[in-house]
Length: 499
Image (cartoon, rainbow, N blue to C red; front, top):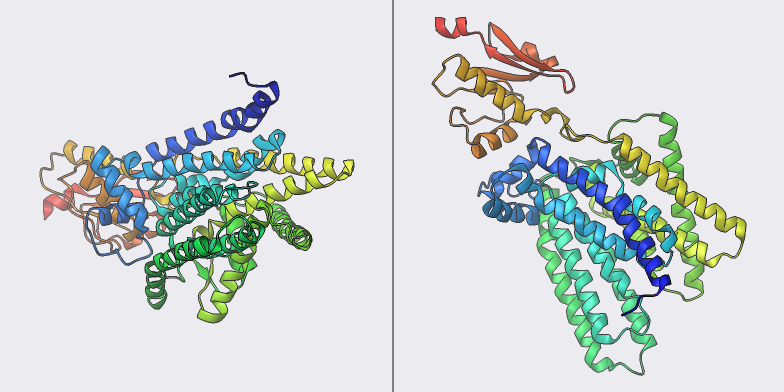
């Protein structure tokens, strides 16, 4: 079968260049972090839940699908850091594959590498694709859901194929929800978009599609999907009653709470230039406003395309937390609980640029939009490269050296001929990760750590500012870690021998 030069050029621009320039380096970076970084507090709690611990099973920490997949990969491949993080690394691969398919639908192959950079490059997203948490899983599954959603825009789609695409979109969105309950608003917005698209589809094909057959079929699909949401809604209600939803959020408003925190997390918690914060804020608000105007314009022309779909999802996502705050007094989401706004806004920008550059015949406007796309993609790529980090996480930075610390204590204990199990005392947040290493290495010489601050012990792991809180008269410094301001001490052996 002979492939035309035009087709080869399209494949080269739409797939080969984006994979080489964006997907491959991003996947290597995420995979290396998943393999190399020390296990963290929240990951460790999830690990113990996957092993049957029920203490935190009803807490926000239990991202149910992630916990289940950790159990599977741990059983199949062992409980190494990479094995337990593997579902999220694979979710990143799914994110990239779905992203390439979605961007192909923008019908601007010459911009594919820039669109892919805008969608994929993000320091905060990279972090969670390389950790054993539900956030990366949710983003990967959500983009797969959007891929099937955008397939519904194909012309003259047979009704059976339409049903399959709709089912797949709902299925992946449901999985995204049970990977991260914060995806509930996205799923509800998706339902609204699918219902709108289905109504228009059935109306346009009323002469060829049997309504008596297919309206009950599609109605049953939506009813079953809504029923599948109930466990997630009940769980969220339990968390709300327990005041667990306010951990990452407050009532200051959508811009002050959600957007400001997302910009801060995009900085990877390090704001280099104060003026850029306001530039990003203005850019996001401007693109949102222009997209709304374009959405209203094409809706007036009775056009419902993929830009309409992602716009409707985005604007419903803006409306949902406002209504939840007013009606249920639920705080606005912030930081990682709002991370799904990143891919949704990126897709909004991509389809807005694609739509407007295709629609306009003004050479100056077209050039301006192309320059904006290339400029934004280049700045995002540079920023992501500048924030590269091979040692720790932004959220749990203080646990960068967990593995090294445990090895150091093990060697020190052996060097001093101590044959008895030892107690490691620490700030409470270190305990789950250190217990993870105690279980998986294994380190039988370690007594289980408790989630309390600085109990009496043989070794102490503390922040620089907490040295005065250590309950020991005489200490010997083993090592200081200036990058995270953490020190490791041993109780003076002279003191131990005297006792």
